[in-house]
Image 1: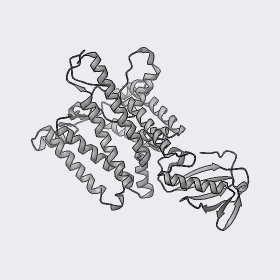
Image 2: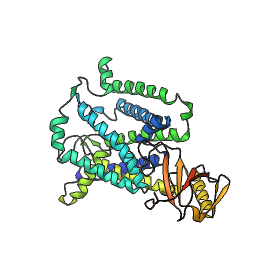
Image 3: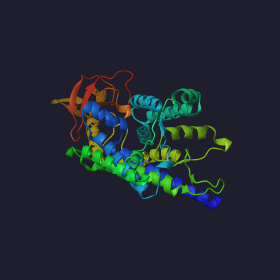
Image 4: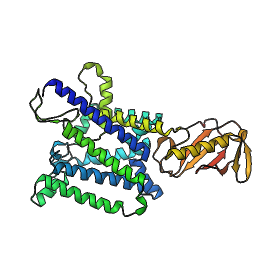
Length: 398
């Protein structure tokens, strides 16, 4: 393989990664797939549907990775994970900080990118801040204490971190067989819990879990099969094209955000290169953007679950704006409306819709100036419960 063929292959890898990321962003936007939303639905509202979506995605991704390993398409040893020691302190601190940040940022990295693509400017602040904080931790003034104080605190694991490695050791089998059986067992255990609740079985939930899991496997295939080569024309070593770790990678967003900002800041030095992770960030935003445009939603009205629901909302708002609103048998003129609060039943997965600890989602819509007493009402043609109240000077359209 010469340099020209290598460059063409790299473009193909980046294009395939971009397509998969585009679909990933589309699916996440359409199905409301969200880490923090899944946890908050379970803890606050007692709904485990989105948590089961996550479990289904994990089951599909684990099974797909095991099958590809067994078939010899990829090797788990070519990832960054098969270490013989685990930096437990770094993992615990990082996990706690990430979970805390998800609440204050109203979602994880992927959800912030999805909302950014749908037009949420708060998510732009969250994404840029997350990227800068990651860059400072990876390469800035926090990198030295991280490397010297936190990462050295590790626990030795003789057989490695993969369950397949332990399975191969216990049953005296090959790594491929160990990966296959461990992935089958893990997926089956998850499936038992997932489908224990028959109410979970719906098109949206199944599409969310299956699609995300398959797309994760697809990204493993792109970096580990399509972008893999036995001999680089310059180094004569095996290589994985367009990966920041120079190993096989799948979806990862925090470090790519940091490296993407670094590449933008120091673009002129000529050493920065586009990676699968950077393309993934752009693809998710673009996929969410196209999905939102296709739905035809106005972000000021809220997050509709589908186009039909959005149309119901618009009809309801048009009736409100037309002059009257039914408020328990009373009629109020449009001039009497001051702002409209919309209350929905979905868990907190959107930054502009929630505050930590509140299971309900509130939005305000400035309609006109005037004075009105607080009252609840339902809009015909819409499934929302609303409240009228006087507006303060600082309340704006959210």
